[in-house]
Length: 598
Image (cartoon, rainbow, N blue to C red; front, top):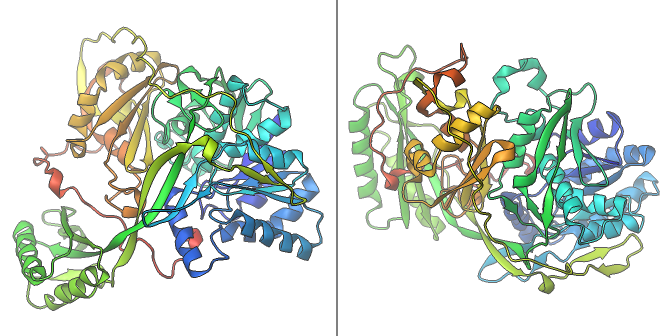
């Protein structure tokens, strides 16, 4: 068995997690995932200012203490914190090792950075775990990489430890599943968990980070260090397995994993066994993430208070339209958010928010032009005029795009501790990706009576982003609930419950062993998280919105006394797709925010 822990799910995760994981229990390898689509754009902007930058600086600071602890406990460290400059991070780590007087051996993996074309800041191929395995086999104590798949941080150590060959697909698939569960840190131990209200609130205040006990046959047990917060149960593991995945075939550079074969068992308190994963040859291509600057954006949030909210909004829209008419931005979007209540006891609860977002390739059009128009209306518009914050100068926004290139054209290179460069061969066999036919469905649940209630009283969900698309994984916990859910929650029903998906391609994938259906919604996130095309630009809460929607549920499945059930909402206004543009934060790149807080 190899015991692999995780101490980071994103750039900016809990700083103390490295120390907590190294001192809280036994480990063979400690991993850290620092990269995401938005992170690559942030690192790209860092590197434009300083060519020696481009890696996660937080990781280097964590290693000031972590390297000594790892050396004492004989724990290897594997992280993708190298970002766009893994060689630069490796050099910085060697300087730190010399300063600390440790014998720690540093290696790195490179080759993912491809020539950027078409205005892209960076083009990064998603590499597998074989380069990491080569570095560990050569005696590396710390391996840093650039853009590898998140699961590669586990498949690489597993290949090294067990000596797996590139065609041991079932074993590799098991490691991919374990890696996917670990990659987002505390999301596997109770963080962002749909059924959090069923557990002691104190338990979830500071969840511990997950650990995978991975076995030679590819099976694993997901757990956490003793005495740490959070929980590990079938629900928390299922939620993470559904996160940012799609169909039954989950492709990767090491193996294509069949998620429809995975089985989960509660082995004991905070111990969930994963087994049965089957693998197939990987596809012949590698995914490439392209990040580029898409233009500039700005936003202003106007506060409308008291009576005549709609009329106030109409007046302001007309005034801004007139002010920008001579030199209008390329894109202007409005969203009226009715947070106001009648006869409210506080001014804030008597107020609605009218959000204006503009975009244009010219920073002047979203900066000075918009700011001037908004400020000049301060004494000349609706009664009670004010804004949540002064208009800014505008900020650049990013675009993430996906492409695919032949794996044979990507130079996957392991740079060993002694500086030797070892080229990693492409997989000996590949297989084109194809959809899996929908499995046979169970008999529908026969019920005498139903009640119109929120889906979340029965089902859990977790959602996330993949470029411009979003996924919503929905699961239930009993066979009776599954017999109802798989027939009730169709594509048509999702479109009805989530009107913002109108006109978008929605696909459903059925995973019976997990009692789950996984939906992908194409294009709902526009050009990706960095473009901030939605109020929730990473679709993190899309699943919770779905759980809040009401449909007819068999009474026998409903809990006796659900907690915090909201009142039935009034009939919704007709949805207008053209108005669906609630933006994200006021600036895509806050100029003074530390990287670890972005």
